[in-house]
Length: 544
Image (cartoon, rainbow, N blue to C red):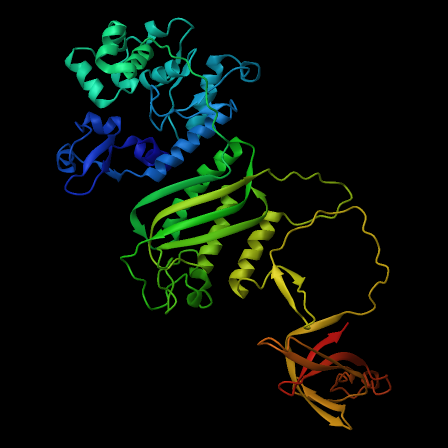
């Protein structure tokens, strides 16, 4: 129940029942106090529970329970590095408990009571209502935390006296053994502990002996520390399929808040986020473009924030595996949910799923947070978060892979490069000067401008491009280069650097001041080339 209310806080004040099993064997698996006050009991069928009045229904989700358990472990790790989940066969074998070793923690966090209040506060921030108990051994602490509400302190040697009033259901006995003891009229720890040990062994064997020792609060065992997780995960199963972007972002916001809170508990951040959306295979996407798809973004930009998740056209079919997976790699470590939500919104607008979403799973790879020491003499640089959002917006307009930092490829093909994600470099106080500073820069036209060149004696004489014909005053070349003749994309070209005159500005006035005929002709240096495979001419760029 807490796994559900953790992700849906609005349900805490409403009667909620959790269902499990397929119809017609659907039964109530859990219920909150408000539902129990109306008469809902565990094991009821859904039809029986409906007679108790209006209820909020939810289905049991193992993924949500795993996320809640991971959040509980994170709360414990904020106090002690030595924590353990209850082992199979321990006094409390549930997924809602965790044991801490507090040896030496008092010097950092104070008395056990102060540690208990700290654990309750941090658990409440994670959306959990926790009971905290302190005892000399893990089994006694587990029994007390399961049986007593709030904070419980058990002094050494008083385990049996304090735990004696607890019901045997808090001990975690097997169902058959618990039923046998109830038939004998034994229902509490103290009543079970009063039985002769030899008689218990004769009837229940060595396992009964161990349970008998646990009823006294004994059987101490060393903790088996749990390894710190290498990733943080949050999951949620939706009651109804979601096909709109706005309600989907509302759910993602809750999950990202919980995920970032867990990261901040450990003073961590993330540079990689993986989002897995489970799609509804029963619903096929429409064939017409919907708001939020690639076709409609260019026509109606104002509809992007409230667009449909589904895409339009023939490429909108759902994947065969029923999953829509997106990976967000961040340039800097981040633990702010608002920034991650905005990036995720822009990514889903550019790559919407092909069907309504029924479940969400988010996974974050933890890393150390960003630390940066600013200086008085360093140039101001844009915030990496704001820059990343701006680049995501640009990619949504020009297309993915066309915004970022260019990287040269290992090839002799002209303009052979690829775009990689932009990473803001660390600023430096000193920059070594170049040995040979550049004298000119070639500004490339992308794509190159088509042109028509007239030759005289196999040399360029005049050129026509940009709706203008101009004589070639001087040239240098040709420079022939070829490559990749063994592949499917061979290339071969001849290059010239040509000097072209710039057109003089024309004035309508006859005033002598406007007469510029006596001024020298201005020129510009261009790079042109002929594609030897297609025999077409192009203007590649202009020298600056």
